[in-house]
Amino acid sequence: MRDQSISFRVKRGIGIAMMLALLAFSLLPILWTLILALRPATHLFEPIWSSPTALTLDNIASIARSDFPRALLNSFITAGASTLLALLLGVPGAFALSKRRFSGKFMASWLLLLLRMAPPVGFVIPLFLFYVQAGLIDTHIGLIFAYTSLTLPFVVWSMWTSFNQIPNELVEAGLMDGASLWQVLRLIVLPAARPGLVAAGVLSFLLAWNDFFFALVITRSSTTTAPVAIMNFVSYASVDWGAIAVAAIALTLPTVPIIIIANKYIVQSLGGAVKG
Amino acid sequence: MTSVRASAAMDRSYKLMLLPASLAVGIFAVAPLVGMFVLSFTDFHLIRGWSGKIGLQNFLRLAGDARFLSSIYVMAALSFFGVVAQVVIGTAIAVGLDRIVKSWRFARGIFVIPFAVPHIAVALIWLSLFTPTLSPITAFFATFGIEVPAMLTSQTGAIAAIVIADTWATTPFVMLIVLAALQGISPDLDEAAAMDGATRIRSFFLITLPLLYPTLLMVALFRFIETLKHFPLIFVMTSGGPGRATQATNYYAYVQTFQSSNVAYGAAIAVFLFIFAGIISFYIARSNARLSDA
Image 1: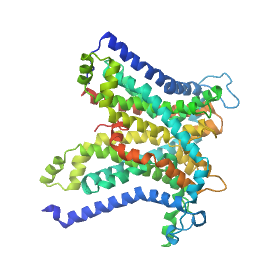
Image 2: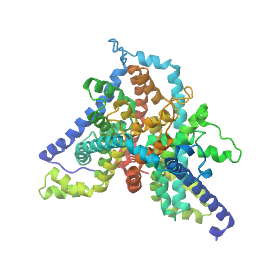
Image 3: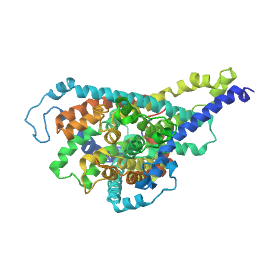
């Protein structure tokens, strides 16, 4: 059999070596961050293999004492509220876009994609000027509205894709039984589209959670979010690497399980347009 | 996809469902972009305000602005090398998981992790890896007497550093989508090619890769538009430097607006970036429309 030949084994060996190298590239920076989080300042600039037992929990304690937990809370509030707002406004709209017959569907899909791709700096400049006038700088509500410019087009787009996969017969059957369109949406279509709904909600949350740029421009000290607050550990005089590593891990912890569990839906939602 | 037949009352319900979403998209997302366009034709300055002047002066100024032109060059380098690296490596991982190491069930989860790390954390992690006094990479090679060059202080090094950090973080996105597409391609095709005497590598390049092409193109477009919007990586790792070596166009728009107070000029740069988004989103929307008509 050719599959047992030496040349096949060599090629397979090269393939496995390549995969191991790529696995190391993915994983080693994560391990490095974990190490950094546990290193005392006194041993920071020594290689880990020269003093492998010099580990401490001080960095975690100092983060707990800092303003960072409050910034995490700000991130939760703003990302969560913006996601709720986007779902509440966007889901019925996406349903209508999917099931109603009308001619503007191409324009609507173009607009939604365009809003998703437009440069954030284009949104931020006019928002900033308006917020200064309206007194919305450094407020939760201001940041929530700004995030909704990201989350709403995303939610409408991905729920539109999800609803397209719900057969029209299901909607028609509900209507035949005398339910109103709203009841059909709430009682029949949404339960059937639940995986898509969860994915849209979760990914929209991450979109806002990961934001750095909007919060950098729109917030100041009182509503600053975690991605901006992490920069407080960087100053010209010194960089508190241990604190940064702990904060980076705190920022990432909520997202890892979400991404691993939802990665099936990322293909569907993030790549809603990507059909082979 | 055909739509559900509608009565007049139902049509009213549909309109009621569309209304809040349309209004909200208009207020939250479209209005700021309209603001961007309007501002780009003024001479609004954060401190001096607006003199009442309206015209194309910002766009004329762009054409002769050396910093703007060099920012496009930086943006093109970051996008080109980033997209190529991400598509090639992401495809390699997907093919590896699908064909070479099928039994590594845990590996898919591990490969996805960097994608979960928020951009600001990606930037700080790689800043630490590129800080010579701190980096374990530098320390590791130093034990063999090899000196690793300081990436962030040279022009090409700084661009390479940003491309590497971006590639680390976003390759999983490419991997996930290519993997899904690969699993939709029948393995029978490869077997048929093998019957005809093609080696596996040949059959990959001659059969699998052409079938993947539409997916790869879409993924590359998505990544391209994202790489135009680099911000945290540049802000944290290089602040646009050394000199202006990593000052990409998006970052330059930020600098002009929020550091030099040239709001209108910044808006004009944003309009320039917006044109890319307009073209690529139109292309993707059109190919989607063709797919759903078919």
